[in-house]
Each structure stands twice: as C-alpha cells, then as structure tokens.
Image (cartoon, rainbow, N blue to C red):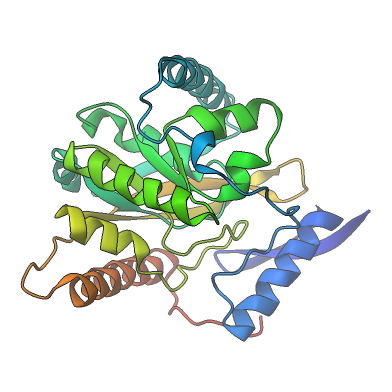
Amino acid sequence: METLIETQNEGTMDEVRLSEGRREVLQRIKEYERAGRFDEDVENDPPAPELLPDKVDYLCKKFSSKVGRKIANIIGDKYFLNLIKKDILVIDGVTGEEHLSALKNGAIITCNHFHAFDNYVVFHCIRKALPKKYLYKVIREGNYTNFPGLYGYLFRHCNTLPLSSNRRTMMNFMSAVNTLLKNGESILIYPEQGMWWNYRKPRPFKVGGFKMAYKADVPVLPTFITMEDDERLDGDGYPIQRMTLHIMPPIYPNTELGEKRGAEEMKEKAYELCKAKYEEVYGIPLVYGEEK
C-alpha cells in the first residue's frame, strides 16, 4: 500500500509516493515530537532477546572474535563502498576536518541518528584520522541479538559495543568502553538514543556517553549530518538523502566540576553546537512540535 506525502526541500514542496510502513514511522515521529518523547523508538521492531554476558566479547579477546571482526570489516567496507560508488549512499562532503586532531588519543564521537547507515558515513569521512583505523560503535541491544543475515553479522562483529538490559552485561560494557578510550580508541555514540528515520533536527541528548568521556578524560567530538533531497527516490518511495558531515570543535572535560556536572556541561555544549549547525545549514530556527 502506498500513500502520497509531501517533502520540503529549500522551500519547495514535491509529492512522492511513500510506502505504508515508512508513512507510519513518519507519522509517529510527528506525534512523538509534539509530545516531547524524543528518546523513544519509532520503528516497529520486535522485542529483543536479552544480551547475556557470555554472548558478547566487547574487547575482542577471543581468537574467533578477532577473526570475525576482520572478516566483518572487509565485508562491510566492500558493501558500503559499493553503495557509495553506485550513488545510493550519497556523501556530498565534510566540513570541520581540522577538528579531527582530537582523535589522536581517543575520543567519544557523537552524531545524530536518522538512518541505519549513518555510522558508516561518519567512519568513511574520518577514517584517515583514526590512529588505529577502527571506529567502535555503541548499538542497541536488539540490533545485536535480533538481526539475521548480513546486517546481523555486521552488527555483531564490526567493532560494535551493544547495550544490554542485563546488569552484568552492562557492567562489562562500561568497563570495556573505559578500557578502549584509555587505549586511544574512538567510540561513536548516538546521544539522542533511538533512530528517527530521515529526521533532520537534533534531538535532546542523553548524558550517558558524556559520562563515559569524562570518566576516561577524553574529549567529545560532536558531529552533525545534514541532508538534502535528491531527485531520485529510494526503495520506500522517499527521496534519497544527500548527506554532509559537519565536524564541530572538540569539547574537553572540565576536571574541576566532577563527573555529574562535568558530563552535563559537555552534553549541553555538544547539543548547542549541533543546534547552531542545524540553524546555519537549513536557515531556520530549531523549533519542535510545530505544525507544517
């Protein structure tokens, strides 16, 4: 079933045919935005099995984990580079590359989350600045435990750090994150929490990732991806999004404040940078919940 929707691109309105499933997601996004439910999932995902401690090797200590990681990175790189080559995953450019020097000793990288592939957009644009050439990604529990096939394999092996509803697993997660940051690795987090498909605004941030940065005494490097409608449509009948990655100045922990206040300060600064970038690129103020 399809329905007609309107998309806005630089003040012009165009009609496109959108699949029923995506129409429902966009409608849910509008409802959640008006209600201020910014951290809630909008996708119709099934319940996720609990991730137990013995089911994840965060630091890739096992030989089988090392082999799986190597294979997954080769497969993933080939897959996504092919999408870029075919102009299906469209990256128009990068701004702020001078700030990538903040990655030399490890950092928490933040980004808005609007597509399953946006993590590769970040990696593709910053990979040359990563001293150890890997980018770790924090992912939701269901992405690790629920996905079959190729995507499931990549979710489990491509340097991913899954969250968990299990307390013991989360203790292992926090320990691994701190170890990786202390070892100079960089970790991508989505401080908005859930993915809102093709949503262009920055959403309010959660503080967890900033506490990780503060505890490990590493900077936060905020990034923000802006989008522009392509003339072509994707498989759901929505315009393919042409993406630009904006890299903002790094935010360093203020060690005099303590973890709680220091992490909050980093969170607020990162959000303000993303808000300012949104308003600069799109030329409109950031307002939530307004009727179009």
